[in-house]
Image (cartoon, chains in turn brown, blue):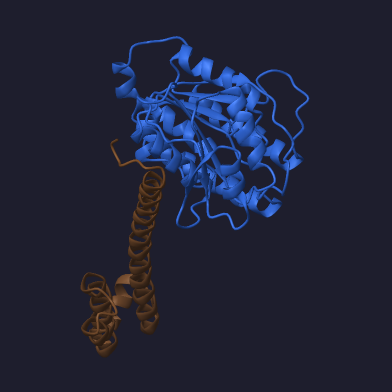
Length: 99
Length: 254
């Protein structure tokens, strides 16, 4: 993850969620007591299942955040495409915007 | 090639937009028929990245062509046309689809209703009067379903909610330039209007059979269409702010 950020494969602000999730999963999986505690809160008798549930919840949050980002990107892309088309139309027809 | 004129330069305050995607068989006839019914009004074909000779034939027929840099779909095309018309200062915009189904001889009726009624949108409707219009069974079912869904939301019946043969005025253009449903826009547009406490009316018209090609709405896509549009309607209803706005608008007749 850190390597990807260094190589600019992923923007810093989007890597934060993954980093936090990775650290949290590592902490919980390296701590049997922590896992037992989490399982107790979730009402689970078999502690490793808690790890799967926590990981699943984390992924859901990240995927939702990514959907929000993609939606914004798509809206911006459409607006840019429309603006470009209109400006090209003005150029082809000898008009400037606002004329 | 016709000249591009702003509304101030043009003899008319009306623009006609024609969204088109691979309609080389019908587009010339559509443009020519619009010129006959509304001489002097600029006809702008919004080309959604057609790969056939739609653009060339539209220009030969005397239309202006605005080509999108990548495929945006029907809603994206229509919104681009609305943005253009709004920027150029036009008061009214009529949408006529490039597949030849919208009969241009009803354009004057739609425009007259738009200019005289004060409504923000006028719909050319196949079903406002009893007619022998034939649509496919799937589409008929969809129309009946959405009539029932929209009636309580809009507060009045809409007979042809899926008609894309519409005219809008400048107040609607101002809204649609900023926000417009991009997939399957016809039905969601009505709810967007309702959110602003804008008004619409229907005028009778007939649709012509598709001149070329096939509808992109297959049976499976119809299911997706219904789910997608229902979700869009629900979201727009939840955003409703018409109560406050209605209190500010002067009352006019429908």
